[in-house]
Length: 219
Length: 291
Image 1 (spheres, one colour):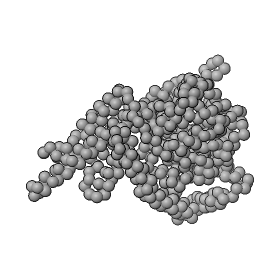
Image 2: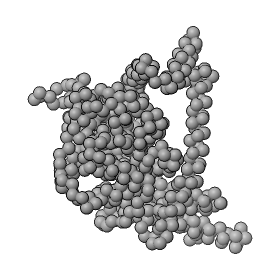
Image 3: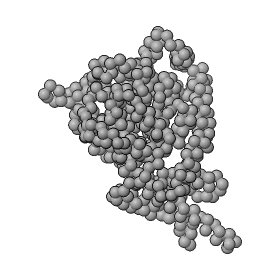
Image 4: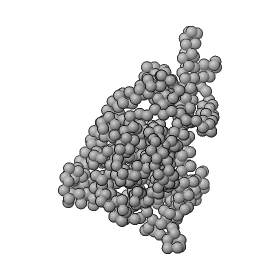
């Protein structure tokens, strides 16, 4: 029974969702909306589970003073401070704790933590990519054989397509780059997308029919 | 190790240093580079430019601060263009840190809109944009595919209230606005797989005109959708944003950043050429020596 019930539920809801997509009737839409609400509810439990897991792992690291235990301290501080700022706000002339309303969004510290900590941290991480890409391009783009040479030429053309210092060659390179993106790139991508789409349909059918059972934890 | 072997195996710290120096110099020295406009960006600008006042543009801000450098300029350019044309804007943010990005953009653009500006020879008088009247910011909800599907039936399903807790029915500009049918187009600015959901679950099911603003590395992946007319325009990376700024005659962060990007690319090309010259010379020398 422990295996049959989940399989039956997946089959019933899977088949229903397939047919629902093609039935524009009011009752079909109502059930669909009802099921969407259930996904949110399940998601909230998953969120709670995720936070609990993060706290448990972080606290264990801090307790045992494992190497790098300072990082979980910062993680926990960030987590609880943002929750605190998000739930405290100004209303009716005084500051208070507002659990169900949006006052926390107007808390200046909530905004400042995002603007002056989150944005610089994430932007910095992304900016570092430029250096790694430069280094990787220098090492990887070598014309060792025909395929590597094609890759190298394509990369150079696409990189040069918005360079304004190429004079009359600028238009030729821009047109070539446009052709590369719209013809060979498109052909390859379209083949991949169609392949992925068919694969997704196949996998979904295998799950609905109970052939693929990996989601239950044991294949 | 001869000179050609050295050219092939430069210490990567030299690459980092050279790139950093070029980026800093081009950041400090103020100059503009000409922007060549491509048709995939022009179609987005023309679409928005030809809309009538009070028509609604839906802007989905689906990126986090890590894509800020490329997508924030796009967001600023498109949103300011919409407000200058007196269009209404519905904004959502379906990535976790998106609401912060959206709020920042709204605040900055609100300030910019207070000033009189002339774009493409037309004077736009400064005005104050009002929350709920000129724009509605619906905020963030998890499970983006479900949110996109839900909005196709009614915006009130996933968003009973806006980001600030105001019920959608109490928002003046949302009166009579049920779903995508009342929206002229959707512009999705995204740095991840939310774009796929907008194409498959949004445009694929509800058939609204969809334009994409993506990071540079994502751009090539979405050309098939342009060709199949599932999207009517595509802005990729800082260059895409710079093209929109050029068309809107509103130079901003993207046009400013393009000079740095162009020179950074030249540095990368320079190192690629150095590596390849070293490779070929080293190989021919080894052949000559009979090795």
